[in-house]
Amino acid sequence: MSKVVQPSIEALRSPSDSERTRVAPLWLRLGFWICVLIGVGAVARRVIAFVHPSNSAPPELAALDKAFASHAALTLAHILPALLFVLVTPLFIFRKSKETGWPDYALFLLGVVVGITAYAMSAYSVGGWVERSAVLVFNTLFLYSMFRAYLYMRRGELLLKRQWLLRAIAILLGIAVTRPVMGIFFATSPLTHIQPSQFFGIAFWIGFSTSTLIGEFWLRRNYSQ
Image 1 (cartoon, rainbow, N blue to C red):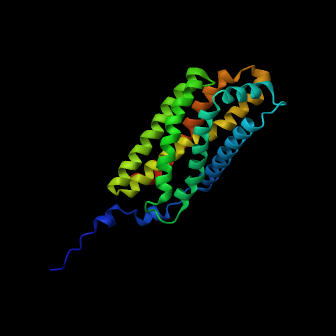
Image 2: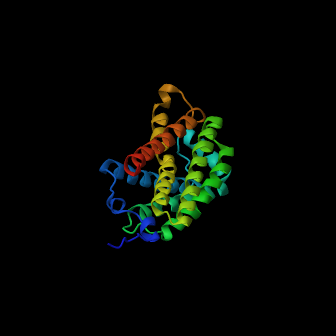
Image 3: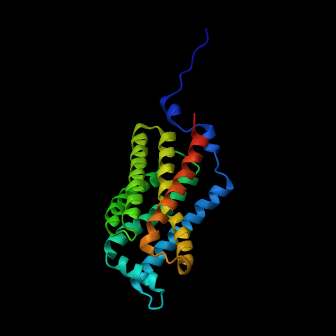
C-alpha cells in the first residue's frame, strides 16, 4: 500500500505556482506607474507650495494653496506617509518572493497613518459633504482592506493577504486618478463656471470609484477560485 504524503502547512499557506507567475496586463502596469508618478508629483507640488508660495498662480489654485496652508501640519502628516506608501508599493507588488517582508510591514504602518489622517483631513474638505462622503466611504474601505490583509498575514494565509493588500493599494491610488479628473474640471471651468468647491467632490468620487473598480475587476478575474 503506497504511502500518502500530506502537504505541509507551509505548503498550503504559500502562494501557488500560478500566483508566482501571474502578471498584470500591460495597460494595468502602465496605469499603475502613471498613478505612482502622479502621486509623487502631487505631493512634491504641495510641499513646494508650502515652502515657496507662488504669487503668479491662477486665483483658483492660489485659493486652494491658501486653504491647505491653513492646516499645513495636518496636510504634511497625511501626504508624506502617503508618498512613502506609494514608493513602497512597487517593492511589494513586483518583488519575486511573495513571502511576507519589510515592504508588507511598512505598508501596514503607513496605511494606518494615511487612513487616520485622511479622516482628519475630511474636516477641511474643499468639496464639502460630497468630497467628505467619498473620503469616508473609500477611506473606510481602504482601512478595512488593510485590516483584512493584516489578519491573513498573521494567520499565514499569504495569498489572501496579498489579495487584500492589492485591493487596498488600488483604493489608495484613487487619489492619483482624481488629479487628471480635476485637471479637466479646471481646464473647462472658464466655460462651465464650476468652482473647485463644486467639482472636488465629484472628482473624488470618479477617481476613487475608477481605481477601486479596476482593481476589483482584476482581482476577481485572476484570483477567483
